Length: 505
Image 1 (tube, helix red, strand yellow):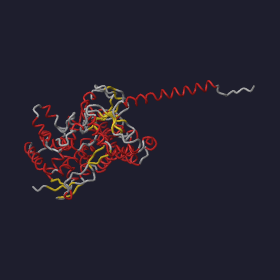
Image 2: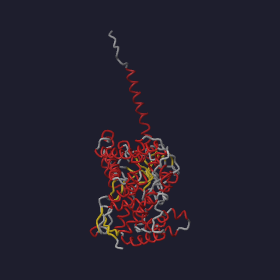
Image 3: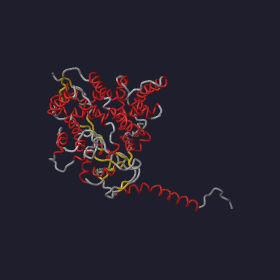
Image 4: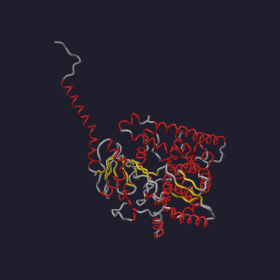
């Protein structure tokens, strides 16, 4: 009888098949468990599967969120999003218990990384070092450095604003360059912040981050590992990053060499130096952190200021009263926009906050990634792997279509502040407040740490504009420029213009 040395006995083949089936079952168990837990949460916004669903979310996200919030006002619900991501929406009433969860349960950095598509763009979503430096160094220094901010606003506005008596201005771009220079004064010092190449690089880098992340999100999820790092928008971002790193890296090396040569060397008083002092990170890491800081500062501040100016142009009836407030506050403070003077501009602060309320920068706030499952006080269980958020405009929703919340009232928060008796209640009405009633800057310990600097910067720029210019819509238009909407993103159209006409003194 011929011996088959390499034949596999029947029982071995059966064992192999059985083992494979068992392995497959165990491998699928976590996914199955996740889907079962997720299925217990009510869902809204399902249109169809695949690409049609993505397109539906891109064009109808605000309606989906509004419908979901009205239907499930006091409970959690999930939405069918545009991505390979399951999004769970939590009502504002439950945010107080979510804010107590540690970062290893609900992660801010993981959620930020997904927004920025860090896996493919290389832009870090871990902002912990920057946040600490902003909170510990920048915010306490604002009063001390207010004169420098004022000085740089003067220089930048003279440089970038039109000299004509009346002209139409693409204000987003103009503000972006002003903000880049003014922020740069506190980030990298007066020499580099005024360099044309640095300003141009900083502004375009900030825009190209979102362009690159948006290009990634437009790819089908299964294509991203193959094409994510190759799309032209990502390559353009990396090229811009290299150029910016050359400039910032050169500044860091100069400072390091100066300190080595002379231990008594007077260190600059800015974010770059504070970052260098707080960490022993590599040149590349320090440079990257500075770039991320620049991106965050330029994008949020420019967007918020543009929204205010678009709204002022469409509501010119507010301009005389706001201008009068600025003049009165200046008169009380020796003609200087001191920190105290900025705090006294209650009507301007109210107008800024109302714009943030009425025209939110994004539809979702309190973005977190669930790394571990947790159970809410109402018994709903949130599985690990979902993105958790709150609807930014939900706190202003009202079933009555004639409700006051649907009307723009620039002095809404001024009146609330005046009527509030307790100091704590007054503080809750401020532009920089981050609470259940105002989630424009986030909520909890990861609320935007740079909002105090941004608020001062915006107020100074707006005060100067109000003193020097009348602001109006172009071509006799009266309707405010519409916001651009795409999925979770909501922003002013950067291509629109407003008319600036010099005030005759």
